[in-house]
Structures are given as structure tokens and as C-alpha cells.
Amino acid sequence: MAKPDPVLDRPILWLSDRDVLTFRSLIEGGCLITGGLGSGKSSTSGRALALGFLRAGLGGLVLTVKSDETQHWKEYAKICGRERDLIIFNAESGLMFDPLAYCWNQLGRAGGLIESIIELFLTLLGIGKQQVKDSSEGRYFELAVEELMRSALVMQSATKKPPSILKLHQIISSLPSEPAQLEDPDWQHKSECGQLICFIRDNKDSFTESQWKDIVTALSFVEMWSWLDPRTKGNILSTWSGMASKFTYSPLRELFCSGSYSFTPEQITHERKIIILDIPVLEFSRAVAILCQVMIKIVFQRAWLKHQYASGCCNGAFLFQDEFSMLIHRLENHFHQVVRGSAIAPVCLTPNINNIAADEFGEHSPGSRTLGFLGNLSVKIFHSQTDISTCKYAADLIGSEYRYLDSFNASSAEGARASVGGTQHLAHIIEPIELTRLLKPDGENPCAEAIVHMAGRTFEATKTAANPKGLNYLRVLFSRDI
Image (cartoon, rainbow, N blue to C red):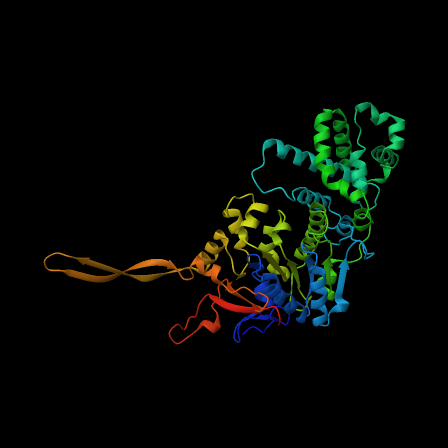
């Protein structure tokens, strides 16, 4: 019999006196918590999971939407004696995180890989844009921005200095507007792109054959760019600048373009640090707050996936996201599919599954994309709910069974007859309406009722002599006072 893993088999949350959520069960794609407004998902089950992670000695990354989330996590850390492990990242903290500098300095085969930086920016450009079928025009501009970034990064890499969002934006925004500028000394002296081209020409002999071939291809793009129609160039530049120009101003310039980083994903998994991204969406500009937090999240997710967990190698980690639908990105599905191997437990709280369907997948109602994503999350906690799609999804997930429905027949002929019978019908084990009846907390009652489902598991507390196999769902009372 295999020995328990000291990391994976840590208890995180007891659901009954015989059923426990272990860290192992939570890394299998993650945990989804849904519930309507006032259902208690954040203050009861979400709080219980947060405290469970901290008491188990786990580090984690916390994204914030509500203004009071950072204060709540400070309280959680104090309760669990983990104040020293907190890292609060905001404009007043004096901390910095340059994502390009971090990516550029990574060891291994992917360290300094330009394509990984391009993927990061393309994902950021897609934030707020639903995953619907692209038009040919939209796809053209996405590919054009990709080529633009690739050429600028190749030229920047010739300096042997780590790239930054600020430097990349300066190069792109100073590209030649007409062919004659390429040989114009004034343009070469004043523009960032011109200075870089002069540096490359002066140091041609210092590059390897492979590097020079890449640089030649990049320079060819710059020449082609100078011939493009001004309207086409304007559309491509605006696609890039709409995202990148935000980082040219304070405080984003100091936070994300310093060339250094004050914390890393490895501090979470190996040093048990709890990093709070204190840039709440409801307090700051929605677009800026989401962009900054998702950028850091993507970098951390990619770093975690590079590291495959082996017993004793690290402590694992959690990723906590309340109002998850605001913080999702186009690579999220991939992360949840493979995160188990890296021992990361993502927790996603959202009012209902329609939010995920609409905000990220562009579906009017949960379709194959949304259901495919939700299928990756092995633990689901359903609080009180009035959203029809979420109620039906929970009922379908728990399943159906055949039941006898009574039937009665009577006739008034001379020999009056009556008959009673029954027929089997397939019916939900838990009807969708049951989710609307779950207990909600209020000023006097601190408890919230929820239905918990775990993939491939029946609950010990539901096993009886009449039903020794038990049920695949469990009704649980979570309290905000515990």
C-alpha cells in the first residue's frame, strides 16, 4: 500500500466528521464555488478554505476584486499565525515585479525565450475579448501585432539586456513611418528604433550566425513596415498601444517596468509565502486592475507548470480568486487541465456559471467551452442560487435515477372501476429547485448551506445500512464564525 504523501494528503477542510477535503483532491483541476448574492460563498466556504490552506502551511497567490479582500486575508493570516509570510503588493509597498525581467532570467530551455513573452502579451491583448470565432480582419491584426512584437524583441535582445514593456513600447512606437527615415541621421539619432538599428550595424561582428539571421529577418520587417499604408500601421499600433501604453505612466511604470522583481512564484511553493495582489478591481480602474493582476497570474501559472511535483520537492501552493469570471484569461482552461502535476490548488468563486460563459467564452448560455472548462474542476460547492443554468448544471452533475411515479385511473361506467399503478421515470436526484432553497446567512444566522460534489467520490457521511454505497453529494453547513 502506498504511503501517504505529507504534502498532498494534508487535510484542508472537514466536510463532516468522516469526510475531509485534502490538498490532493483540490489540485485535481481546482475548486469551483458558486452562489448568488448574499449566499455566503465568500464569507463561509471560501473563508473556510482560505483558513484551511493557511493552517496547512501552504503559500498562495491571491487576486483581489473587492476592496476589503486584502484586509480579510490579513485577518486570516493573523488567526493562523502566518503574518510574517504575507507579501502585500501595491503601489505603496515599494515592491516591484517586472514580468519580462522574470521570464528573461529563468533557467532551463524556456529561459529567455522570445515566444513565451509574445504569448504573454497576446494573452493580455485578449483580456476582455471573448473567445469567439475571430473574423479574418481581427485575426490579421492579431498576427500583425505578434510579428511586430517578435521583430522588436529580436532587435532588443541584440543589446544583451533584459527587455521591458517600457523599452518594447518605445521601440514599437518609434518605427519608421516612411522608407526614407531608415537612412536619415536625424531619425537614427532621435528615435529608439533608429538608435537600436545603428547599434546592431556597429556590432554586426559580435553576433553568431544564427543570431544575425534572426536580426536580418527582424530588420526586413522594419523595412516592410515603413512601406505599409499609414491606416494599416495606425490600426496595428493602436492594437498594441491600447494595452502597452498603460505601463508607460506612473505607478505602473515603477511597478512593472523596473527590470527587477521583489517576489517570485518559487517563494510561494518553496518558502510558503502568501502574495496578495492588492489592486482591487472595484477600487481601481477595472481595465487596469484586471490587466495587472492577470499579467502576474499568467507568469506565476506558467512558472508553476514548468515545475513538476515530486514528493518532498516543495510545499505546493494555492491560487485564490474571488469573482473569478473577471480574472479569467484565454489560457485558463489549459492551466486547470494540467495543474495537478504541479501541486497547485486553484479556487474559483463566482456567482454563477453564466458569468464565466459570457465573460470569457462568448456564449449566451453555458455551452461546450464553458462546460469543458468546468469539467476540469473536480470539487464543486454550490450555495443558494437563483440562476437557472447553474441550478440545472448542479442537478445534472449529481445525476438522475429512475423513480416510480404513481398513476390513478377511474371510470364511471355501469360497473365503476378504478385502478392504481406506477411507471418508472428518470428524474434528478436533486431537483434544480433545491438550490434555491439552501439556507443563506443573515444578521442572526451565521451559517450557509451548500451542496458539495467531488468527482469520482461518494461521501462517508451518506453511507447507511440501506445505502451502503453512499451518495455522490453532501449537504454541508458552513459558518462565517468558525
